[in-house]
Image (tube, rainbow, N blue to C red; front, side, top):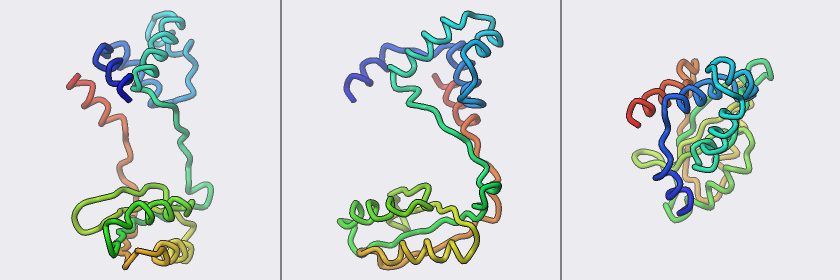
Length: 166
């Protein structure tokens, strides 16, 4: 971790880096040659800059966007998890991580100890997932909110705001 902090303090993103990241966010599989053509610089330059951003910990991998509706998993719900004792949080998180339909779990302040996002085929399947969470030792109860529509899921806007600050 210390190594990344030292590299980060020496590494500054410029406008070209922002443009490279912008194109990679749109399509993580875009060839460096295509980025080079769009930005009118060499593919070697793109490769070097991406490598530096990886070494600095700015780029930590790539992700794949999946259309869950086409796979039959269009149901989204958010589950707030109440735990008997906060000392059980790590144990409960480890059990939650064993449920593949829980796609996100965050330890939170406020009403819930843990807040989860689940993907399911339908309400019956979601019920089964929620019951699995309820059955975890240490969970006192859950509270579920059904997502009617995932209206905003856009990393790009956040990154553009961050770029303006850097």
